[in-house]
Amino acid sequence: MKTKLFSLLIFFSFSATLAFSQGTVASKTSFAVLGGVNMQNLNGKDMAGNKLENDMIIGFHAGVNLQMPIAPEFYFQPGLMFATKGAKNTTGAIESTYKLSYVELPLNLVYKAVVGNGYFMLGFGPYLAYGIGGKAIYEGGAGTIESDIEFKSSIDSGDPLTTVYVKPFDAGANLFFGYELPAGIFLQLNTQLGLLDINPKDDRVTDNKSLLKNTGYGISLGYRF
Figure 1 (cartoon, helix red, strand yellow):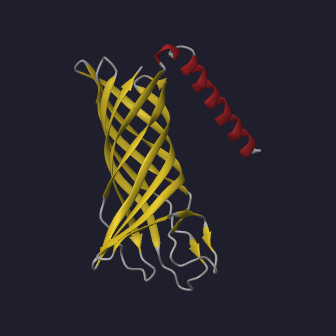
Figure 2 (cartoon, rainbow, N blue to C red; figure 1 turned 135 degrees about the vertical axis):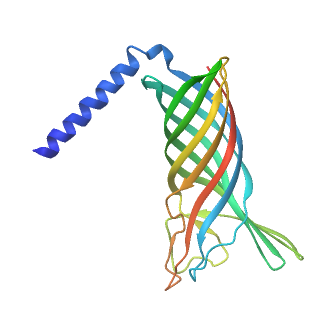
Figure 3 (tube, rainbow, N blue to C red; figure 1 turned 180 degrees about the vertical axis):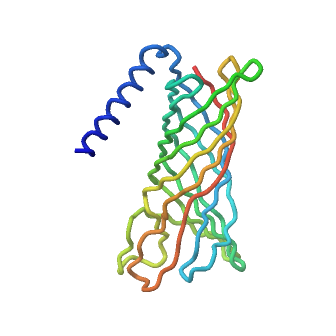
């Protein structure tokens, strides 16, 4: 009974929020396009449990978002983004670069306050992501070898050892702050912390202590209509 009552309260609260955002302040709902540069890394542990010593690589992101008011100075900002991530590692004379491409769904809560002629912005919230492509590039004295990264949740015992595998689903947290001009142009600094282990379960290894998470930061330039 308590569970049903709690569910009803959540439903009516959500309905009231939607009614408020679509009613009294619906005219302030806005749409934006944005893009920018990422500095990305893959943090975690190797199969033996040792900390990974990866270096950051430069990536990019581009997409859109919708900004809906939910209370004075507070907005719900869902979006749809394309982002590239990955890392670089140097072992002896071999430099390995791993590039991952994701479609992301950020779901941010944004606080906007009037500062000068524009708005100071502070946003945070979760993101969901799905991997759609990737490359592993190995460079050394003998030349360059490039192969596709395969997305799968578990690695079977018969899968080749030469392929790099990554889980397709990722999720984590966003944090950003920035400034928006009256004309709609805005600039923001972003930080992203992956919370899921994207390293697949590997049936080929009996004692696998590996762990892999996306992390990074970047800068975005956008225009809000």
